[in-house]
Length: 151
Image (cartoon, rainbow, N blue to C red; front, side, top):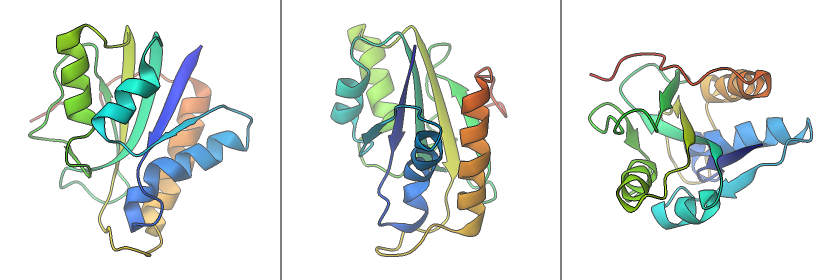
């Protein structure tokens, strides 16, 4: 069984990307763990799980709404390419878990490119559409093949 962890803050514009994906998945009865995206909460959320999917907002410089995929168990997180919206977040949690031997055997990270994080703002239309698309991909159980090579 796959554990799906959706991260972010739904009250900060595009940072709510993970919550939008969770909402879509939940309409199909898929259980989702909600998480702030901070490292310790992620470690707690995936402890003991073998197959995990994490969804969060990211900033890479690509167009807002771009969906990124990364197989975290295959390579170190490409921090130079993928910047989390959290201070000590997804990348740090993954590398800490790798160091401590606590990384799930399968860990796929999906990032939705975000553009604005204003408190109280709604997510952009591009992020809303990407969330629908990504939820459908997760439902279909697509492989965690990278959408682009880290640079």
